[in-house]
Image (cartoon, rainbow, N blue to C red):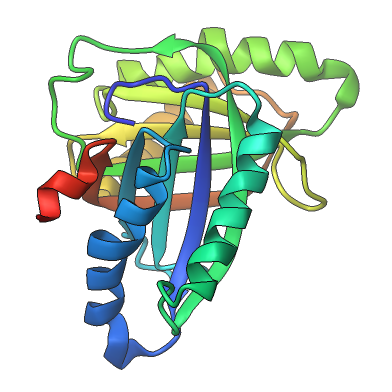
Length: 234
């Protein structure tokens, strides 16, 4: 989000079904699809990322749409309706594979550092999680907001962090989403945290047992667009 803290976001994980069409897929996404989606007024910013995890990914590409609207259930429905309309108009890429779409509501405070909005965002480290004990949900969120995210930012590997809760929780998916922005190659930042800092934090009793990681993503930044996106391509 590059230092912005929107009310909500829509995440869209995609693949191009035909490897030979990957360049055309990205051309369509950047020059046609993002302008279509942002130009409709449902989002004020859109960002694209490519998977940077060397392990076989479930989705090669990630798009994040930022919205200031509070009626996020309705926003999600309008996004779906818009995509259907664009498909009917022939403005969707024939080889696009939608892996997953989800709406998220921002929770917690604004997690910033002196580098927020100053350092370039090269990529993201993303954690989707659940609290394994419903009776400890408040304690889980307090730990995340007061202890865990400040600990991660204190490592210097990440300059800004964000927390979200799923607008419509899905079975077998995480209810919570944490996104960390880094100005370093994202795989290196995530690997250094896991190798160096996570053991240190665990030994210091700064981690908790009641967290279930349902998905981890490491993505490098591709493009960012704003509401006046159409003027950038004319």
